[in-house]
Amino acid sequence: MFHSAKSNQIFKTTYLYGSYSPIDGDSFVWEVNGVNTDVFEAYLKQFSLHRPKELKIVVIDNAGFHSTKNIEVPQNIHLLRIPPYAPELNPCEQIWQYIKQRYKNQRFESMEDLKKWFHGTVNKMSAETIKSITANHHYIDVFMATS
Image (cartoon, rainbow, N blue to C red; front, side, top):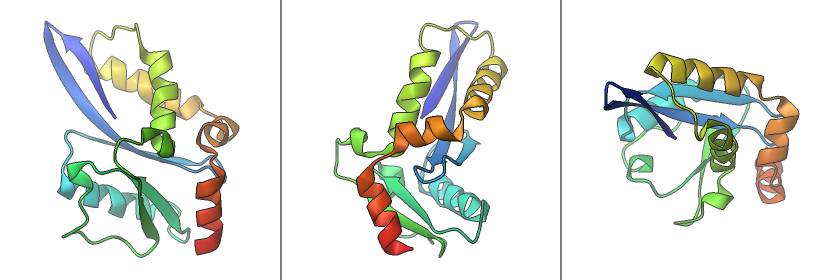
């Protein structure tokens, strides 16, 4: 997901990687300045350190930067690729849609204001809200089968 803030007719952009648990409502968000395979690999490493004893299933789409050919996937992460053009199957996309509904029609004076708003919004999301948005019995079944 990316966000933009208007600054003197110039748009600044930031990118966010996020993972949300349909099991317990936990969240992990990592902010980056761009997206590519190296950043994706770094995200996976950082995410693996969050609750390191936990097995994590990361749903990925076919974005070019989700290529797994030459990256090292941490042992506590399993990547689950979804079909092309199927964002409804990605729990993270459901969270982004929830956030975008609160984000639209707002204007931020600076990137810092936008980041503050975003992080506040994510931090205010209860575990129950995250679970209700991301709950998908198919993913829960996959998780239970792999744990």
